[in-house]
Length: 171
Image (cartoon, rainbow, N blue to C red; front, side, top):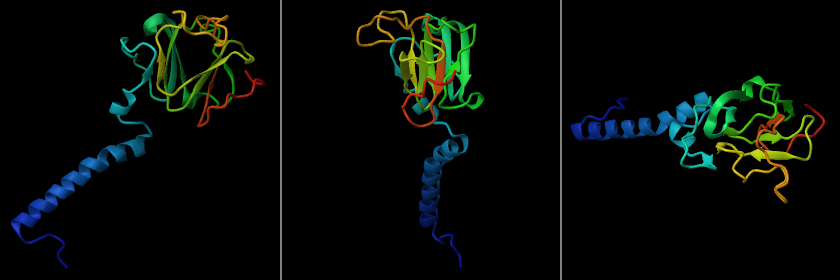
């Protein structure tokens, strides 16, 4: 049984179909193998400062910075290097020193003012970036704006699939 068409026009149509199918499947296959979204999707980040370019940040990583606009010392918290769904101390260098961040992850990364974690938690959505926690818009207590988030983060948690904050019993 010969599956290849005999006429030139039929062969051309088949080559065209194969090319179209390949063009559609290659990006999907790359996504399935790598586990990351194609670059066009990753560029569609939720940003609190759309005029500021996003920093370079490894895939599946919460990147935090000491200065606004993603400057100064950088502290990376990669998903593959930490336990999930538990509070973790940011470390002595980053403790109370985070001013900007980019959550280059699919899922929520949580920040907390205290360690052990307290009622002052904030869910950073997947692909969300905050270029300046010191601009008067970011507070641990959003109801009254009494405790600013700038330079006051002590813990983080990397969620796997839900947006329910981890318990306050770890850190």
